[in-house]
Image 1 (cartoon, one colour):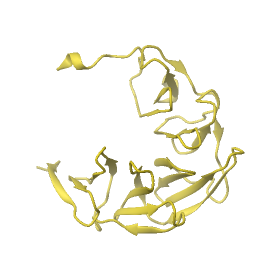
Image 2 (cartoon, rainbow, N blue to C red):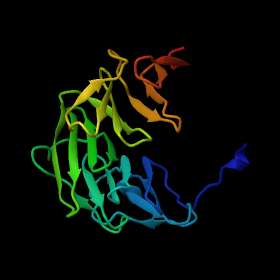
Image 3 (cartoon, rainbow, N blue to C red):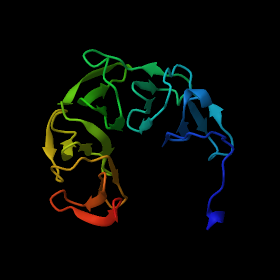
Image 4 (spheres, rainbow, N blue to C red):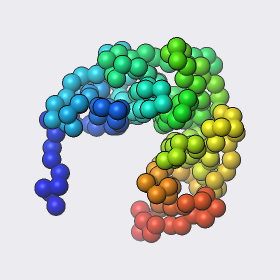
Length: 219
């Protein structure tokens, strides 16, 4: 029913991303509409939170509860250690020209995916971040961490890959759907993984057995 939903006070047309820190909701939009906003009262009021974010579109937001870092960006990645009061660009060689399309933060790491693969960054207490290659030459469209916080899953142009955060940043293994181009991944509260392709949505709890949900966009 319509009365289950209430419109917030934020009047923007293009909501491109959203995320949550420990006490704020963040909304990413276009530079024409203000780029980045935050709310401390469940959307009753909003304020600008784009100081230092130089992106035309905020396509991703991710909060790292272990380090209290907030990440945001479009093609590039910015981070904040003061809940969005200010932002710092994370550029580091050899990936300064890397164009990010998806991002996830887990433990002491942040991973960013794009057309040329996945780069990984370790988060230090000093605020320093060093980026390096985690997965080369594998177009990656979606990254998601599991609820236990020990695995990251990547949706690529050739199936789903899995990374264990305790065995090295470049140690990926196949997790099924080989041959499928995975456009989006999501994990529910029970640990089931849902993988979207151009024509179907699959689900799995183990990676060895994927089942179609019956959603077929071409039907």
